[in-house]
Image (cartoon, rainbow over all chains, first blue to last red; front, side, top):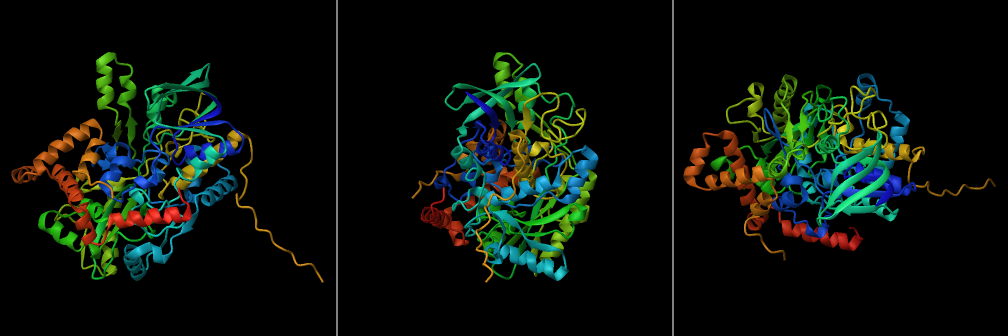
Length: 504
Length: 89
């Protein structure tokens, strides 16, 4: 196949780049390893949906102290298919830090236009109190009584009825993930979209991109010749693809600088009926302690999800679950200073001969993700869990169940006491103006090679403190217009025609 | 109506990478036995994993889930009807 640009990955970054490029007149091939998911196959049942919508059934895990579950979406839409839909623009303080610490030249007005464009494309709007559900009402009451800063979240949804299963496949297709927004736009503009395409190598010749080699689901092989490649395989998998292609290695930063926004959640037993399974699971936030790197966001789900995460056992677990309609849950996310790394044994296994290579590849296909919580982040969790307890008590909780072993108070929690998950991996191919310090430059072009770009969370050089999907999409839009050599247009929505009254 | 899977965890385990698949199957085999549960209490982290998986399986049972106020079949049926009525993908 031949095209102007070959895009690898159809998640938050790749789908956006592909659509903008195709609509701008470029010929595009979009390769996605996962499948297309038909919303008719969504069952609203977590075990089945974890198996079908998530990479490795959602069992990607970091190794370290503590081990952290890091679920990743799989298929057209990538993780936007299974996230909560929360949308924040990049905080201005983070953009300042990017300029000062990483030398990144990001024109704020241009980025603003990208944000506006993305927000229109995926229908970003604030959740209404009616849709936010009982879980948000509990947190709101607590925050109001404590005088803590709070608000309803903005999210990418259209026609949402609060099915309560954003993370397990939206049954109404209300969540505007990239698989139903940007991918159809890319196709409509002529892009060729191939699912089940597992990219093996980015080939270069004479310091310039040459072609992409991929295996197809039917066992066939594919080579895509193009002028440019845009890699958007995700923060966890992009480093392995670059490394196995012998690219991005010069700075020594590839696979390093992993931030993940580690998170946990507590439960409260309320006197009122909460019905956490109804309404938007992540609809409300409390940002009173954001300057300290702590943000609270709603989490909720069906009984099977709650039962899995409820930090009780035996009879106490059963008694609390019998009161499921009266359980509220809220999450705590940390803007981490800890940094981890990603290693790809499968990439190294390609260098081993025969059966040994196949065995190592099979055992190591899940990658090795190393991440240890540092002292500052442990302190953030201790403080955050205390604050979460305060929030629930202020809301009138009868009992609070923190995610700690019985008898362990937040202030004395050790790393190994914490039960953490993470949803926002970033930074493993970080952008930096200097080739010796980063993998890509300010324009997301790979240092040292022409024609290779990266457009996923791996380029984001620091923890954001907020959910990253909008940042990734805006940076991807910006890259697309840079490749087109065109300015980023303003709003996609044409101004409404206004009849100007004639002066009498 | 969709056919009910023999055990909701089967597909979940089958989709896991090989090391997790083998490990979780072994842990679940131990954890489903009364003496196995006692054995696992000496290893809190593993015990927690087993408890979480068994709890997810138990409360995924449609009758129990619906009794607690979440009827997955109804949620899906409403979603399908809305998608069709509004021409969504």
